[in-house]
Amino acid sequence: MSKFNLSAIAVRERAVTLFLIVMITVSGVFAFFKLGRAEDPGFTIKVLTVYAIWPGATAQEMQDQVADPLEKRVQELRWYDRVETYTRPGFAFMTVTLKDVTPPADVPEEFYQARKKLGDEAARLPHGVSGPFINDEYSDVFFALYSLEAPGLPPRLLVRKAETLRERLLHVPGVKNVNILGERPERIFVDFSYQRLATLGVSPTEIFDALARQNAVTPAGSVDTNGPRVFIRLDGAYDDLEKIQNTPIVAGGRTLKLGDIADIKRGYEDPATFLIRHNGEPALMLGVVMQDRWNGLELGKALEQEAGRISSDLPQGMTFAKVTDQAVNIHEAVGEFMLKFFVALGVVMLVSLLSLGWRVGIVVAAAVPLTLAAVFVIMLATGRYFDRITLGALILSLGLLVDDAIIAIEMMIVKMEEGVQRVEAAAYAWSHTAAPMLAGTLLTIIGLSPVGFARSTAGEYAGNIFWVVGISLITSWVVAVVFTPYLGVKLLPDIQPAEGGYAAMK
Image (cartoon, rainbow, N blue to C red; front, side, top):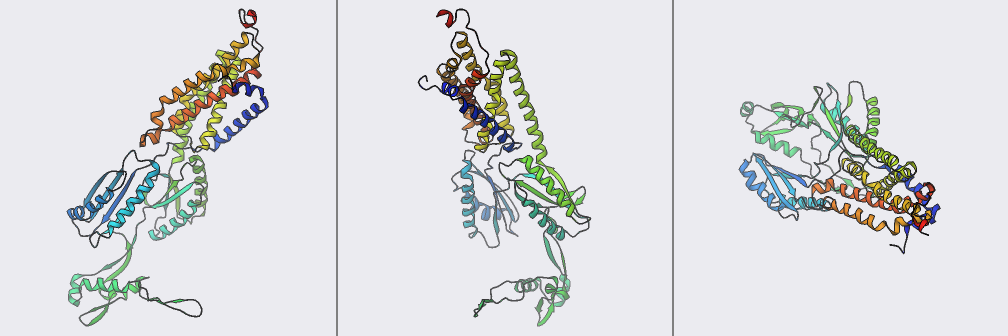
């Protein structure tokens, strides 16, 4: 490595080297504040759920005629691992799991293939089966939960207000999706007495058939004119309670109105499938999902501001309150690691100053923030962000970042004590120590390679230990052979040749 000397070039082209130092430092500060924050790194959930409904079927029928055909289709997937099925009368639920080694990039395609295969199989299921219904987005984690309460207000009006607030929250930067939880579907109840129907000679089947015929939405064609095309609509589909009450029922040669033989009223799903209470009051929840790789702390502040505006705009008697906020957990987790990180950084720099002298210590200590600034820029460019894993990797590599700089500056001091000129001594960082330092750096990085290249969910979660440590150590090597010699030339004091050194031998 002696023919091409990067250290000598860095010392010779001092203006360029100084420009690079300033540019990297400024870019690193910008990247530090721009990098996303999260409590834990993201990873791909390789599971989807499938369910089907068949009213009136037994659990065995659901297993034999619904679940088994669907299971056979999902077994055709390329990365299929297993399927777990639960059936009860009228209901079947399946959890389809892909292999843990499935590449994350292939998971969306596998989910699409599962939807396609199950959709093709739906046409072959027994008549009356609803589904299969597929959910491959249930792994979305709610970043924040907000409750909407209005004691005494009809639930349907509360849902309409929740829809309006959902639209407002979707416009907050960093929000991927907003789900409304706890909505109770509306129902129209037709209550009748079997004894009364028997007296009038009306069967329940005649009522059901009349409702189905009247509520049908069927095409009636269109009329071509010289102007716009005129579409013909059949008036009959229900849009209010009065039309249901006026539905004609023909029985025994007589025509009756449905409202004369049954009580018709508006209500809600009974029994309710899912109810939510907040502080003892019925409520709706709005779950906010954060976009991938977004800064959770920034989203938390933006949501807090929007929630304040929403609360001020709500009518009296309606409250909008925060229930959970992931930004608080992110702030605590990242703050804890940041504290440990800066304490470790301070200890490394302090030990360097105390053990090597203030001038030599400044040169060595300066290598740490310069290396970290370059690492932050690379993390921002490669889509990484601060979380438990990346911050832990930075803390792990802190003690190693000064090793190469210490070796380079010690070699320079030794050569200056031998009587070599400081510019020439700075070139020894490349010609005599660059190769051994690089070999030691690569050896350390290779020791963590199983984590970085593991084809599993654990590897996807913790893989940044390898990549961040590798980036940090390679960057520290570059700093040691490029910027440390330059700083040594600028900051080291004049060193007299030692007795028996190079000058004495001359």
